Image (cartoon, rainbow over all chains, first blue to last red; front, top):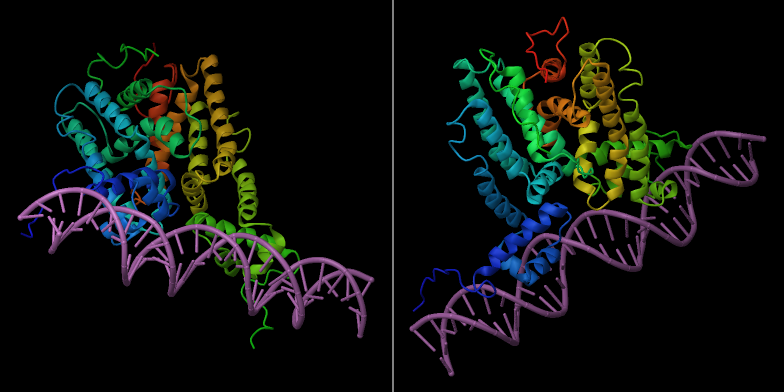
Length: 222
Length: 222
DNA sequence: ACTAGATTGCACTCATCAGTGCAACACTTG
DNA sequence: CAAGTGTTGCACTGATGAGTGCAATCTAGT
């Protein structure tokens, strides 16, 4: 009789779909306006759900945010696929990583996440902690890759962590941060930014046994 | 009744000093917690002033923010003193600019301003506009400097604006953004960051007729 | 001392918002 | 139909916060 219903994807309207709808609405609104600036009424109407349902599914507004960030973390964790640095030559790998970074932070939701982290993490430190838990391993992993190449004699990075920061800075400054601060978009394309970043980075850190690829590459076709 | 007791906290001179006290309190609180997270009561007690005085001096909370940002803009406008790029060799000038950038964004108030811009500029676009009005001219000015050096044949920057972004990215990524996002501080010193940024930047853009680039530069001519 | 303007405490109003209780309703399953 | 579960609307509570009116009070300038 009273059976445990697996609640498999029923109609998104009535059955267990409300929880998902709420989380999706939270992604839209929290990331767009920030946590404090979104009321439960906003959330309910954005989710197409009664306000009371929010409290049937979650114990508090904060729990909605937690669940939203959990889902977002999983998405971001796949940003740089494992093994991206294992094959190919340095320049190729760096360009791949650069494109990967710029791609996975391209959606407006990532910009919103950065904004929300900057804004609300004072009151809710666990927001910054969760954000950090996702990004920091990837930065460290990149630094390990650079250190590895240094021991192989391909690069000469005396401080791999700083070098990793530098590479990310070359990518983020013209692309991500203007968006976060709502400055008008620079007219450069992502491809050009990646090309220039790789070029400058290698120019500085590559061990010049032979200069084979440092220069003659196709300059940004745009 | 403890009613007739004057505030013994900051004692803002009783005469005209209250307005300054309020603005100073606004700088502390708004930049630390964000605009939306500070109440007029917080502001009044931080300023050592009656809540009613806020409304005697300003018409609204928003006007307090506007006045605070106005003062802040003037401070930031002096960040890179005029003429900083006119004298000395490229490497010297870049190092001076780099140190200037890192110095003027060192105070916690600047980090707070960035946070507030990211957070509240969705609701109040004029915040981002004011922030932009300060930073953008300086970026453009730096780009003009790079373009000038390119015409002189000292540098080879095909895209001076992108190059300016790159230099700033090399500085900001390891220093400013971790602070904005409340990630733990990297252990690198500001001096090291500036040195490495200048080195990498010149390694990429300097035309090879120089004498004393610290590290063996690679010729990077087109 | 006197006066004018700034300051202060206080008691409001009006609005928003998180969260709860409850009864009615819809849909699914047996 | 009946039971169970999830959803909905509504009316609350309790708290916070922006902004105002007013009378008492303080301080400077004369």
